[in-house]
Image (tube, rainbow, N blue to C red):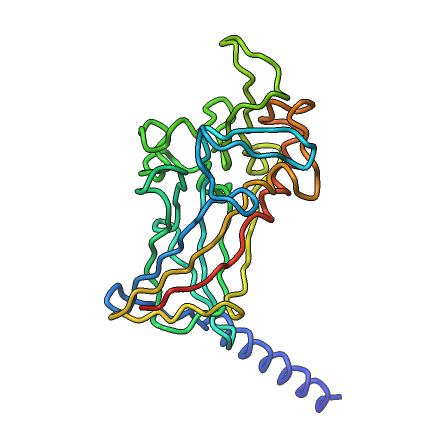
Length: 273
């Protein structure tokens, strides 16, 4: 019996040691001098055409014509991965970007990552619940609700951000007060603060191997070029009829549009210069 007790105590002790070692394992810490630049370019298109605001007319899967006058969306929580599974997560404070069609200053996400050959890219469309509920002093730049750079992408009444904003005209849309046929899609919802609500945060993961990994070096420029097909917002898994849904904001139907825009990103090529 004493032998059994000793073996039991020894086993518990070994498990404690293993658990302690596991807890003490830390991710490597990188200093800024150890990092190299990486850019992620978001090239908005509609089907096989370039997206041109206000002038080009497109047709969705419902057979409705439409023009886009405004397109903006948040990209956040960027991380890259190597073929061996090693992953680097860009620090959150440096990982929030607003992509605006027609604005050269908001066409890409610029981050710094350790040198390496990266075969996978992941990011979030939207703003995570933690950042959405932080004190406003922690939400600066494109996240500052009072900044012109934010461009009205914050719902003060719901304490959350509009992740994806698209507006335009369509003959299928009803006439609004200005006499125009306007459609508006303002999609947000981080899951709720004090009680569960709509969660339209989407995580996108893209394999970079087929069209070239990102070879990140301090003395080179690496750019991951993504094509973003906005037509999939209306013509994805759910065919969105502008006539039936000319204005979608914080409603159950917004989930359909969010599921659609989660499929609009594809890796076109990587430039390693």
